[in-house]
Image (cartoon, rainbow, N blue to C red; front, side, top):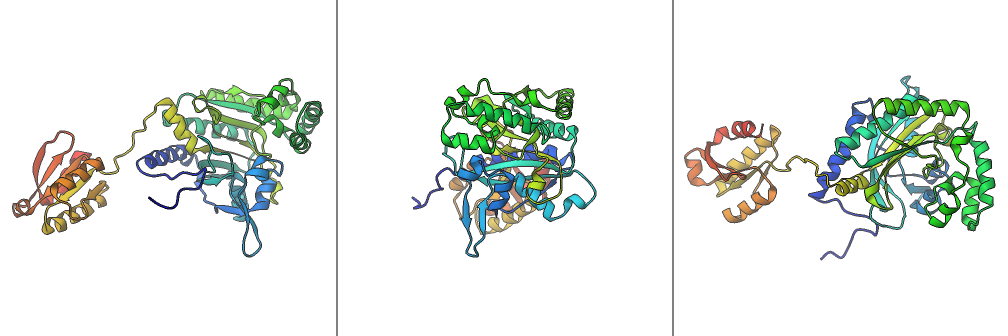
Length: 420
């Protein structure tokens, strides 16, 4: 028994379950790669100030959940709690917005870290796939990202998820709503921390999950009633484009999300089979974030989808992904000459794209065949001195049990033919 265990709130991805996570990441990324999004990878830690400015100093992420530390050189860094601020920082630093082809379309996959109370579907280390379209203000771009996320989920076989949609207005109309909401919140029976949050960013209070707070918010003013004409028209076009694409959604006037940088379009993907942690992903437009972190005005939109929660959603719906076999052929040598010959054939099989494995450690026939069974291989190649003396190996179909003698030099061609 090992002395060490994974830290609280984290998990290890190990076979065979890890294959499902890889398949989910691939399914989410596939429609992005087909739509002009290029891959980007950023460091696992960034300046604390990047997240304080971008995510918002009043958010729980920054005030309570961020893993922050000081380096030996005195720099204040934080493990990344989300992806958007890092990706935008990287795009600005590389001057991607100056290449003359806006929007800059990027996708990413990685681990993120938040010090939260661990429970099923909420971890301190979690995995996301995200997409950002930087440098263009266009309802079609917002609609594109929502449609691509819907496409990814459906390609996995998910059906019981819902898309919630709202508009958070912009710098023209949100201040009027902000004042109306603050006046409403000041009249409620809220604790000091919540009242302080209401003065910094009152929209964050709408995102409070506590029942005693939500009960008091029943009659809170709604942002949709304060949208300016430009934001109304923008939001209506997003709705029309999504509808025309056949993607169902629900208008949710109280949807605000948990990050300060969102403007106009905001959306969330929820799955009712996950209990309290029902959000499997979300995103929105963040037109002012570039300026917040010291860049030029670059209207942008993006989303992040949780790999962990998507896997839980698949389990909730009983969806079994069709995963490629990790091993198609397993070689069992009996004797030193057979080890040399079959190891060479396994190498040849791998070169032509056939997943092949080998009985290592000098096991006897019985032990080696147990390993072949555990590997899930469709075919097993068995060879001993007598077989090789006749220039053949025994090819066993592990499903039917049928065994056939095949010429040593015919192994690769025969298996290519059988495995298609």
